Amino acid sequence: MHVKVLLFAALAERANRHEALVPLPEPATVHTLLAEVGRLHPELADLLPRCFVSVNQEYANAETPIGPGDEIAILPPVSGGEDGRFRITDQPLSADAVIRLVSNPRAGAVLTFVGTVREFTHGQRTVSLTYEAYVPMAIQKMKQIADEIKQRWPQAEVAMHHRIGDLAIEDIAVIIAVATPHRSESFEAGRYAIERLKQIVPIWKKEIWEDGSEWKGHQQGPWNPLSRPED
Image (cartoon, rainbow, N blue to C red; front, side, top):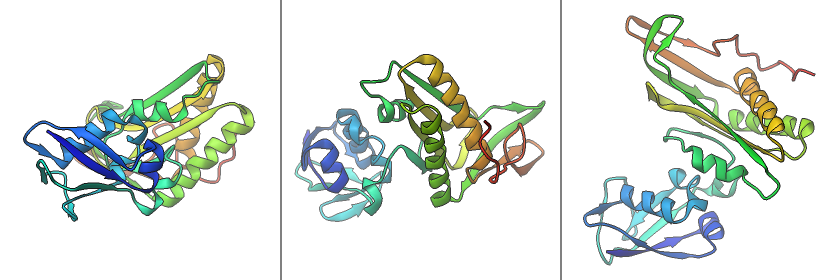
């Protein structure tokens, strides 16, 4: 079946349309719909996890069924027009989505750092991790890091997405993408970005082990929000 989806605000602006015709299998749900919209319109992918969906003018959840003739609308949050390059989310992360945010005609290299949940740390087995963040400040600090990178590598474009909530082994916790004209700059700026994120962005993790748990920060040293960039 095909369903007509109404788009508003930042979604409509990015897609350059207020309606989209989306093919769906039968039966279908809101979850199926969002996945297909993200596939057909990758320019919307980073906004969709923060959007609401209405079916027949009622707010819907991921499992709400969708049928032929339903009136469907995707509603962005009020802040949906903000810079999507810097995000804290409880939804799974996509490297492709982050790369698209920095790709540009001037870039000859896009370096992507993907941080995942590992099973063993210093010989201790981790069962899962829980991340927590002071979200507004974390986003501002991510933007600060991007500004610092711009000062050192003026043509660099940076995006950072970090996941919060409960993560299992091998889940992606953080993705950083840096696009620069040359590969050497992308390696340098990418390393700078992850090290500064560990230093100044207010995100904490709780390691849950087989025999206990502990809130902690970066494995290579304490979180230090007052630290200055190294010269």
